[in-house]
Length: 265
Ligand code: MLY
Image (cartoon, rainbow, N blue to C red; front, side):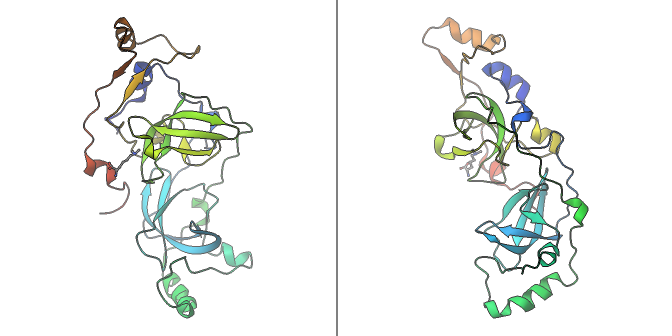
């Protein structure tokens, strides 16, 4: 489904390794996504994580949901995996003796909240409990190594999952860099963060893996474990000043990359 970018070829051309799937806090077989647009659920407000709110599924993409908090605007949508602990069936909060809260930035007067809640839930389709999957366990250790390839959420454009590289490792944290893109998109995260996935994830979930950025510098990987050098890499070695080659990538069409997948336009 994604004919833009092929990991196999790219790994070979760059002489790089993909991070093994056991290193990630993701299930080996991605969870089924049975949610439908319009379904309601409970979600922790990302801007105020102690409060649990009502959210509506406004998009379904791969193993993730695009969510919008009821009573909030459409500029604060967020994405969660179907096995995220941040989401739960409607009724969970009440069962635990808690109250559903208005989202941060609730547009109406707080006094209208109880009535708003009744109305928003009335007649709505609630996501069945079976749609929510258990979060996979945390791998015991951070095994990531600098140079390993993976797929990662672009936190500046969180609907995008992109080819990425481990740029650094420090204790429990890894530094995520996006292949072909400026360092402006980089971030540090915990090794068990839910925003990073093994190579092949998007292919398995049916999500769209973004193309490489246009500045793809293919540097020779000098790790001992590297596979034999590809023809491209060997060529680059013949000219001494050419320690890096630039892979041709298709022009990145802006419109293609900023359209949120799974969101009805
Ligand atoms: N709106 C941005 C999108 C950049 C996406 C970068 N990611 C994929 C690392 C643009 O100006 O193209």
